Amino acid sequence: MNNTYSDLVDQTFHFPQEGFNVENNYLRFNGVDIKRLIDKYGTPFKLTYLPKIGQQVAKAKKMFNDAIKKHRYDGSYYYCYCTKSSHFSFIVEETLKQNVHLETSFAYDIEIIKQLYKRRKITKDTFIICNGFKTKPYTRNIARLINDGFKNVIPILDNKNEFDDYKKLIRAKEPVKIGIRIAAEEEPAFDFYTSRLGIRSRDILEFYVDKIKGNNKFQLKMLHFFMNKGIKDDVYYWSELNKVVNLYCQLKKICPELDSVNIGGGFPIKHSLGFEYDYQYMANEIVATIKKVCKQHKVPVPDIYTEFGSFTVGEAGAVVYSVLDEKMQNDREIWYMIDSSFITTLPDTWGIGEKFLMLPINRWDEEYQEVHLGGLTCDSHDFYTSEEHINAVFLPKAGKEKNDEPLYIGFFHTGAYQDQLAGYGGIKHCMIPSPKHVVVEYNKEGELEDWLYAKEQSPQSMLKLLGYIR
Image (tube, rainbow, N blue to C red):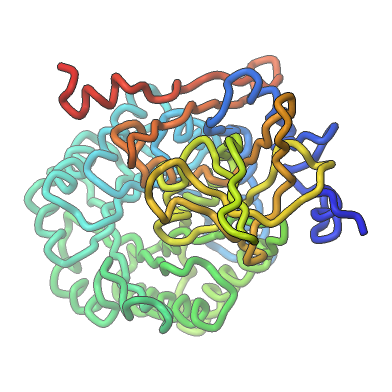
């Protein structure tokens, strides 16, 4: 029986796959020579492969536009990037190269919008979808953008009182576009029945008639809908989408300005070599469902907006570690200790039990064994012991000879939310530093080049934050 790690992968999955192949026993990620980056920068480091962002945007645009063409759908498709998934300037600006729009979540997002406008990365015609429960500073910043001439800023009302702020603060001459978020009904297995975000669907018609209809200063343009479970091909998702489109049709009959439905984000990304998801089928079904319900009600179909965050940037990211040591804690559990922490670099693995696509960088021709992965913090939860496709982790044997090359491992498709949740820089658990961040992109000559966005966090920077250095 063949028992090298390469044999294990070949016997379990179709390999190589898009974005992953092995050359001379070293893994490549989207053609990037990771071993060369390890030799150049050392581990641990975070990696962002910028070209993947454009590929993902192009994929979604093509899927929805093909679905629109197939179903002879009269509306248009708009791709918005969900900035909270990664706020880094090089991420957002790379996304904007693809002619997309933006979605915000908090008051400080508006400061990013201003900077992007100063840099001429967006115009005052770019759609800015303003989501979230609004604090006073958030509504003030939204109002200032609109008063400054940003024509397509669309505040999405998260509660009824929010509308009063805009009535007081906005002084635009032209009618202001607004949206309403529908409080989605979550699936029965979820922790609560109805989302805390948005306005109850049964209250929306009355709210529109009482507060918005006949107000020449505002136009209801958009209904917004998002389920925490994401976009899944199951009865519950299609049932909720049908409810939303039925509500759109009821409103459209008394609100001619309403012309858009925003289905939020929720396209999953690949967290296992065994991942399967028919994106084109889902896009086709979404478009077909909306058209069918609108036809039943005899109303024009809406434009379709999405707010993809993880789908946009998730598969562009990776984290690379070295295995520092192998520990045998009993007669069956082998631990590989990495040179960083899962809690501080991949907080979703700790907070919600997320599984990422994990592969060794080297030693593909070595025998494999079942192991547990341990981080450097003193927290008993700083570990990774199972993958999405199996309740175990298999990796090549680490090697114990002095001249042996260390085992390097990579966690892939980690580009969304991890820095936002862990907090970039700052103080981490057990003072584990933020790792280096390497960016790979194409230069003007069309060649891949890498550059260091950030060095590993220094002890001095943390001591200053903690008040030990003034």
